[in-house]
Amino acid sequence: MAQRGARNILVVEDEEPIAAAVAARLRSEGYAVEIASDGRAGVETCERTKPDLVVLDLMLPELDGLEVCRRIRKSAAVPILMLTARDTETDTVVGLEVGADDYMTKPFSPRELVARVHALLRRADRAVTDAGPIRIGDVTIDLTERRVTKAGGVVHLTPTEFQLLTHFATNPGVYSRERLLSQIWGYRDGSGARTVDSHVRGIRRKLGDAVIRTIHGVGYALGDIDGVAEGGAAS
Ligand code: CA
Image 1 (cartoon, rainbow, N blue to C red):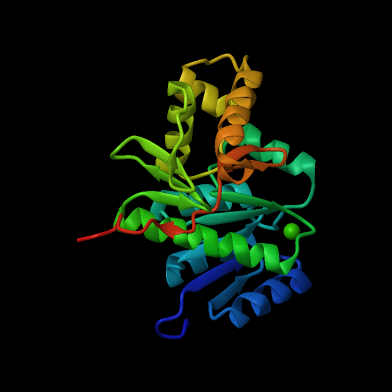
Image 2 (spheres, rainbow, N blue to C red):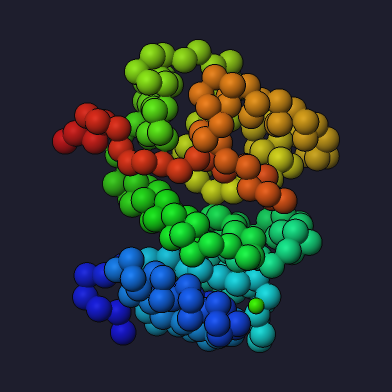
């Protein structure tokens, strides 16, 4: 069982060397780690240990990662970081809109994995405390004031850019262009993917590239949140 006080991470991965390397790296960062080596064990371990985060491989014996993700999602709001082996697999993920919170393509560096885990946990903490403005580098998004600043100066976004940015800020996750078109523009036929790209370009031009991340083969996600802006979380 997890040691008291440590954040508990479940790694569901059938390739033993990868599971061991990921677990070792996460333990060295102070996390308690459980490993499940097939999909069914992953679901069971998740129910039993109630982890703070799940690192989930897509290709698994027994139940594949998509089915594991669905089953975990039914009972828990735990952040899920999906590992995929190739671009063709990320295409599958997009097709099924499975709703993982972030994706990483193998091979990845342990350092990158740890960064993604930290970011997901920060985001989950933030959702729980519902604290003030969001800070991404020198960019601050104040949802209540409907104001975006960069290095302290107010930046004027178009209404669509603002809507797109706040959509990411209030609904953390990875979004395909099709899903953004449907949710923000109300398009159902999947046309107009370039519309999304052009608004993302507009936001990046004004606020810097880091504010919206490109998730290769999947779509877009909000940049990594540094924490709660100064003064924003008072009370
Ligand atoms: Ca695998």
